Image (cartoon, rainbow, N blue to C red):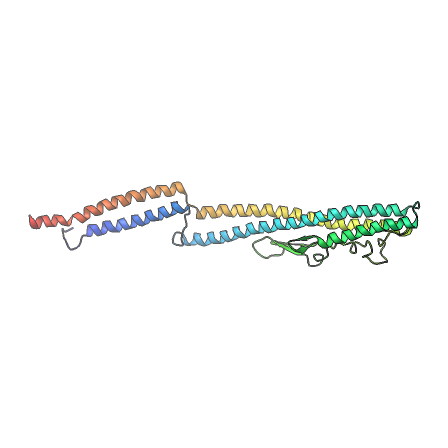
Length: 286
């Protein structure tokens, strides 16, 4: 290579290597600072696309877990109210049993029936007042269409959501008290014969209530299992996303040290290359 002053090819070459090393050093610094292997699409275009899809699914699964937990809270609210209704039904059957025997007078049975009707009214009040986030649970609103609890990342009815159906639990729906049809066996216990008929009606009411509670319990167990599955899915996706996205600090620190040394060497060589034209000057002035 000729000794020239117009073009310092050695300095140009050293500057090019310096730029490359400095760029790699900057990239390593960014990765170590952020903790991410992929900070932009230029780092790994395909990896970035896969990572963002995984992040979307992870966020959706986490929200699905919260949805399922809300569903469990709703079911527990309904079940708690049904447990109180259960107590009222027990008392009503106790009153019907009391009125069914022949040792009470008609006036006394009217007093028993008064409490019987009060219990029926309380059942209706509880059923009409029980709500979760403004959604009434036991008044029959959910007995037909039900309520959808969505937890999956798609919209498949068999994979991503459950429909919770809760039958009406008012006294009239259970066939009890003055709210029911006058022909209903559980209408009142004001006479011995009516009280005896009410015993069977109360058994049916208890069975209807127990069926609703059993269905709610089964749904709560399903949602518990669903939550466990969603958490496992989210955990596995998070692990896969981490392998794509997160930087291996040990490996990247090795790369950082390497590029730092190369950068320092390139700076030193660039300084030396920039001094070479002075050799030509010494020939001229010498």
